[in-house]
Amino acid sequence: MDSMPTPKWKVEIYSLFLSDVSLRSATAQVCVNTGPRVDVGWINSATVFLFYGQYLIGEMVLEDTFINTEISNDVLVLEMGAFEIQDMTAFKSFVRGIMPKPRNGCLPDKTALIGKLEVVEKGHRLTLAIDLCGIGGLTTDDPKVFITDDLIEITFSMTNATPVELYIENAEFHLEKDEAYLATLSGSFYIEVGKRSYHLKGQIQPGVRKRFFGNAVLTGYRVNPDASGLGGNEKTWLTHALREFKIDVNLDEMVGRQLE
Picture 1 (tube, rainbow, N blue to C red):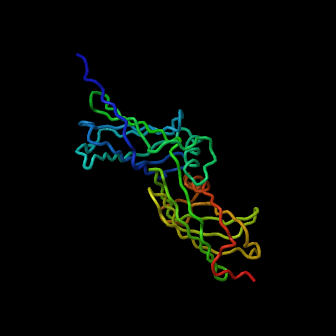
Picture 2 (cartoon, helix red, strand yellow):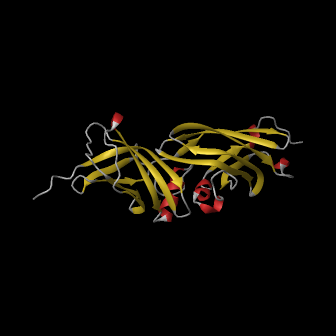
Picture 3 (cartoon, rainbow, N blue to C red):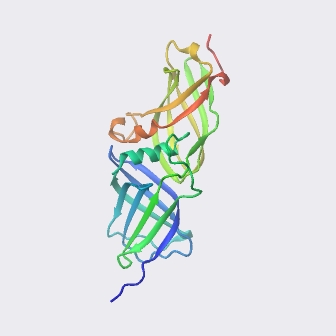
């Protein structure tokens, strides 16, 4: 007996929340804007593929689980389990591409993140393929620098044009100029959809105060190993991801400058 036709749709991914598990693995929550035309039926399993162009970053599988298909507001949320990062080079390119001033060759060319959704195995399984190449990235405004004695604060806003979200609870940053290390700062670094403000605090290194003029670079350094719930910055890929963050800082526009 012939099977019924396999339903296929293109759907918008409005949130992809990634969290770390280990150096080689991650978890993801995928939120899909299905719209009224999509009927996934009574699925009980799901497979989500993350691609970067033609390269498979990872495959997530959810087996024999009640998946709420009574969708409110035309939204489907898939809480996927841990997956192995199969191509770390592609994953690095994806993370680098969303950070400010992307340096890879995959240029932003998408106005929305679109996934290919399909219901297979006679209505039992949903598959969703997502291509993360060319989805745009983060932009920042001009950072503001505040100095009092040996203490330094840097504030800035960042706008995320992608649906990708990533939380780093206790991130450490370095302020550098001409390969000189000027200050260490720390604070929460939450990449969320839309615009968010950031407030970093730290201390100036001894003997470098006369270098506080012109342009410097604020760069991510590590996940603080003292952060609650983390086994040290060497245990996951988050530190690698944080180090892809780099923004210019104009030290000539500091507030409360005391450098004599």
